[in-house]
Length: 333
Image (cartoon, rainbow, N blue to C red):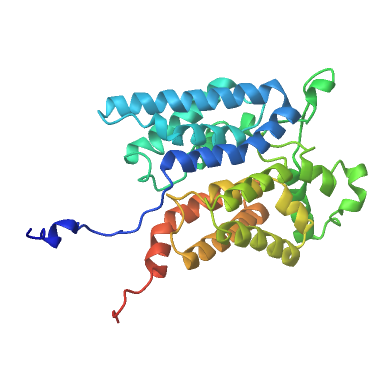
């Protein structure tokens, strides 16, 4: 019997030739699972306002995604869970007491303007949730900077208060003008500043998903275990913030790491596949840039928090970082 031509057993195609078994929906599901601890912590500390904000953002993102894909006459992408992740991340970056109609506006902006206008998942140059948060911070500055105290349902009424970041902003000013001595954590009881333990577990004012550093760390460990993210961006991001704080003074270094959006930004925002570098060297540069810009904005900017703007700026230069750090092809000069 004549043997068959072996050429028909070869499939010629363009690179890449090695594929991972992970799918978009599997990765997004891992991110959702990793966000469950900080979601639960936010609901525990802020009660039903956090529940309504999360439900509003997630449902609005899903509806907006379906409507956009239908209007563009493209396949429905709700099943990849990327809209759920965007809505959840946006909600965790919002104050618990924000009016729900503002959460709807921000969610529509995240999906329609920051994602689908550019072509959908994989083509957006900026993280959709962070772009929406920056848009809302500029458009609704008052509600976006009004915070509920943790355990507010245990008091007669909801009370708004300043975040530790706002307090540390005044310490930076005091350090620069030498008009006062910035207080340390040893006298937090008299200044109203939380202790390191309170900042770690989340007993402080802030956004729903920013307050509990322990919950965020658990989620990051899960993503590292599942190999959804690598250590490069989170570790360098946090190390840069810590080192800058030690050098600049004005506030304890650990307080800078545990407060605001540093933890959720380093572990869940800056590590976004679409808007972060693909090479290991590029990720190190990206993480350093995010941490440095975050602290520069915190110290010299008009806002006490600079994490969102820092990551968005680095998103803009991500294509250049990829180009500078791409491996040299074998044999090329």
